Image (cartoon, rainbow, N blue to C red; front, side, top):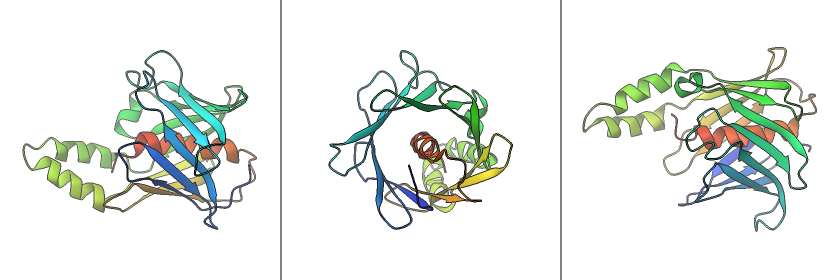
Amino acid sequence: MSLQFPLTLTFKFSLLTELRVTDASGALAAVVKEKTFSVRDEVRVYADEARTQQTHGIRAEGFLAGALDWKARRLIRRVDGTPVGALQAQGMRTLWGAVYELLGPEGDLRFTIRDDHPWLNVLEGLIGAIPLIGDLIAMGFDYLVNPTYTVSDAAGQPRYRVHKKRSLFSRRFTVDTLRPDDTGDSELVLLGLVQLVLRERERG
């Protein structure tokens, strides 16, 4: 999978969870739809707007995983069943600031994803707890303050940065490269970051 960065990930303004991924030229890279009424998190990825050509599936590992288990591993597979890798949340640490591991098909660590400003999540939670006006203040906070995430390789070198963009009516993220994309893991990175923004879209 060859990608032209920066990528833009935009949530469709809808009751259902749908996400479009476009590359630097504006070309469609993927359409993502989260399965509804499922006992565990499940996502389907398509190559076309009409969602007739499914390319990948992402599913939380274990019964009721994702719904009740915050650190459930999200398995990423091609439509033919070939494993691509997995996204693994780092337990309780992820409740305060996003910390994830992006694993290869053999379970080996390829990348680590971290929230660059985890204290913002704590501050937003404290604001939201204020009776009556807390929710209104939190809405303004959501608009004015938007998180960023850094994706580092197994050697600890920053490779990509994810930005959540300011928006009133939609959720939009961009992904930039911080150095030449020579890892050969663009497929894993794209699908892992799709799962990241699905999980982090309500933060900040």
